[in-house]
Length: 78
Image 1: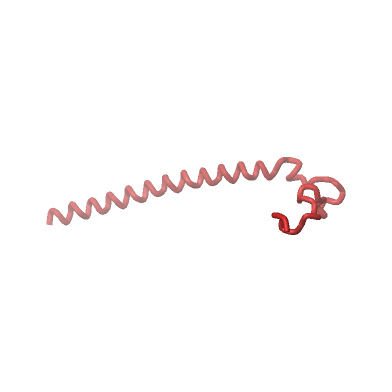
Image 2: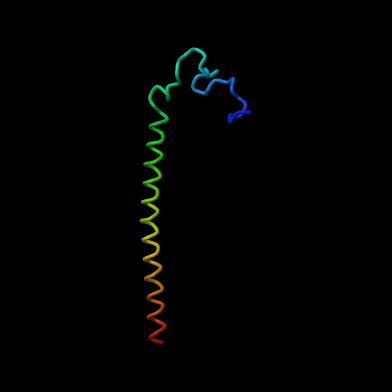
């Protein structure tokens, strides 16, 4: 047995016709390059979400630190 998985007689996925598009037309998303644009928007969304979460974490952690610093100074005075 060679190094292949046994499906030697099958054509690669790109060479097989898609049964959903028997008329030869590509779907509108493929004509517009929807997959590539979708990935671009997904990357942009992830980047934007990470920046927003970092900014929110900064605000929350600074408020928490300020609160505990006040508690520490109040307890030190007592």
